Image (cartoon, rainbow, N blue to C red; front, side, top):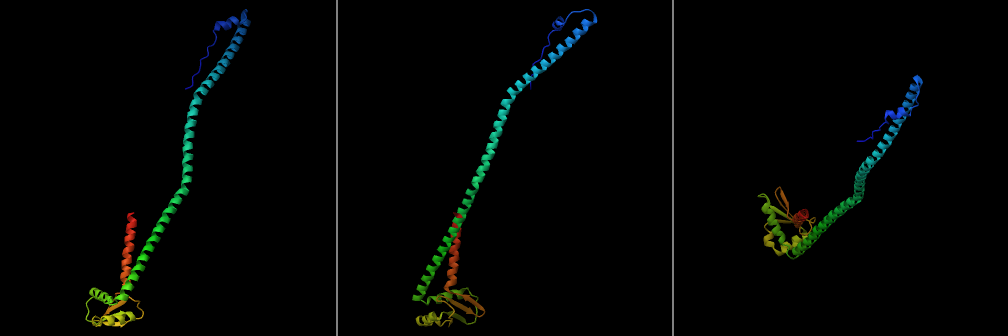
Length: 227
């Protein structure tokens, strides 16, 4: 709260003593006019002194308060500006991190595919080499296929690659007579189809290899999820 200094008017006797003495109405009128003038001067002087005193006090009290508020406002504005600048600077960093994460995911997917493809190629080469040495192993695949097929009184027909059929008949003719072996030029080496009545099963190596590769792929995905 602003404080004002009270102005004390001079005693009335000082004003009356300063007025010229006279007789009758003339002296009284002159004394009253001079007294009124002195009163007005005193009022103006008190008003001026009060204004100056209030101005000085307002400056002395308002400056520290304004300085404190300005400092606080400056700190808040500086924090807001720093946060905004940090956010702007962080945007490219976030984008870079997202790009690196996507690149990492893509690289792992590519590596996983390469591993599965490599394992598949190696497995196919091993199977071909094994069948080249022992083609009668295809008959074991036929027996496994018949074990999961519905029982039927119809004759069992086994379709094989012509070259493998020839070698199977040469190497194990007694076992080959259990079924009707037929050549199928459309079949790749290592492939065979088993048909009994209305039921037909792909008993070749490719179908089994594909199932194994699916398991390998799933295991790699599970391992990546755990990481």
